[in-house]
Length: 402
Image (tube, rainbow, N blue to C red; front, side, top):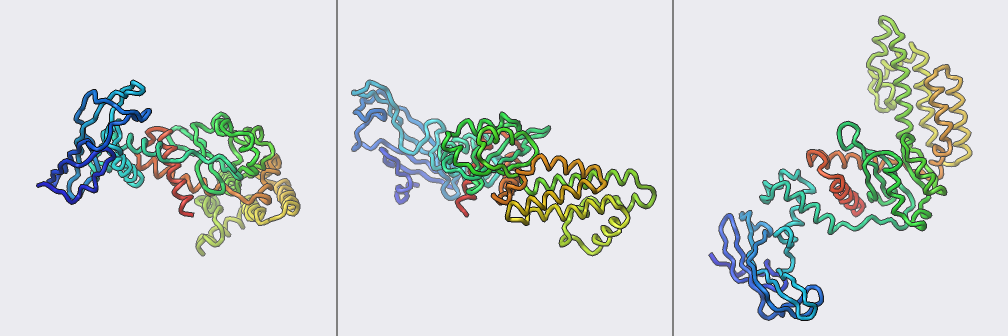
């Protein structure tokens, strides 16, 4: 059948609808060049003479039950009288490389944000390889470049994205949540690439950098922005202390005999839990362990004392408390605690900087869930460049919702 009422849906610059043919499965739209429009050179705007005309097709958005909407149009190759160059004129809004309308490509890109690429075919009949190329092309065209001006706080962390220690380094704006940078690896060179693209003024605006105590990022930050304060992440430090507790627990289990082994066994997470997160049965089991084992009791008591460090808002009282806690580790009689305290003393300033800049890498750690979800949905990492585009898309969406 012939339909005339939906012509407004197919308005393309320089072309008009000649005929629309529809069925339940396919819509065929024939376009012709608007004779009222002068053929102009895209380069200089001069008049062009028609050299030859080719009939081409392009996919468009699905309509109703018709998964296939095909545009047929004359692509006119002309020669400019002014500049002498040859150019091909197509309907505005059609991508010459993909033989699809840009609005259809953008629709596929929106689907790819919420669906696995393999599932896009079930919705619009585009295979996963094509959906990948279109999504990447749309994101490259539409996403703004990272905003590197007026940076105040940076969050830096690494994330495993592949098996066998395939890591990437992530840099996020600590205030807006915008993902600014991603590079393969977790060494100095991985982070150096971020600072290489900053101007002196952009570096000077950064006042604080939140990061994990582990890794090689500290030296790069000290070298590139020496005036910025490094803030070691609270939750990473507490996790480091949990590792010490677990080390002591394993040592005590190896030394224990008979029924004492059963008391220690299975208490790992019970030692980590806050009191408010334990059941009555778990609390009783923990109390039995602490009454029985002096070293684990010391570790557990100092764990709660360690957490209180981040309750301080002023630097001098926090420094006094830090020194007191370090002294407790020295006289604890537990070598693993003494070793942990010695390591912390080397980074006293970075730990206490939390009083001046109460930041954590929590937003970036939470963003790691987004990284995992995108990788899982894509059934792996197709390309690190594409992964960065997808992550930037998510970070900018989250920023807009704030």
